[in-house]
Length: 248
Image (cartoon, one colour):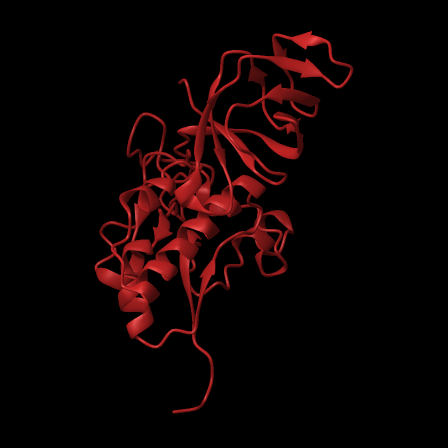
């Protein structure tokens, strides 16, 4: 066997063309998926057209929203890290194209913890797998890795994401118990939030009791893009992220 490193795709959005050579985006929009510019046409709603009846569109509805016949679930293999490592895989790939800073931070630290648990022969904490439910994602699947029937790989009735948490902002600096934040979503006084860092075992919960602008003026809420200050009871460092459970 050639002495080459083996990498496998482990987590994230799956293309309808699992080979990664999908040309739908190039043909339909002029945006090449192979250049990182995919328009995601596999997530769109489609109708059926019979070749001798051009212009006649027949609904193939899976629900009242339509039929998303090319829409696959997201891959999630975190529970199979021991099997992946035992198979001789050298590295795992996490899909990050067109993903947010928050998405990547949450997924990467979850898989980092899963790999560390495997190396130390510790049981994977439930909170690590739960972390992957706190990002915006489609329903999860193990793809072809576990069940080759692909019965559980498609979501035909919607292309919407599941979103249980909102990314509120980034800690830019901390001084004397006051953190300066860059808001990424609306932040309100009274919000119950989580402060997350590189170590998933040390996430902290906090209630925002006071908000100030950079001049020290009190605020009831802050909008995306604002630089604000909040007083924190728990420890935070620059680079930590702030999130809140979605109220919807």
